[in-house]
Amino acid sequence: MRAAAEATYIGSAEHKDRVSAAGAPRLRADATPCPPDLTQLSRLTGWLRAAIRAGNTGAQWEQGFPRYAWWREGERCFEARLVNAGLGEYKGWPLAKAEWPEAWR
Image (cartoon, rainbow, N blue to C red):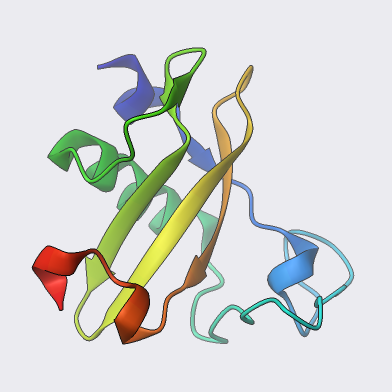
């Protein structure tokens, strides 16, 4: 599947409270900050691609990529949102347990 092979996590300064690969921090007041232990883009891209392969995606797709994808890693669950459909680029953030997909609660 093309999406699982080509999707990439690029992050967003809107979910950062420190300098990161996404640039200078611009944490929005309503945004969940990215956990400080998640700094490796390759690791996050791997999670994103695994989520797509597993079918942990929303029903809406744009230009061959799912608009949303979810990944559970231990006791944390993350949501990724497509930010550039032409390139398959995503940002993501951790979810509160009440926001997790129902099957994982």
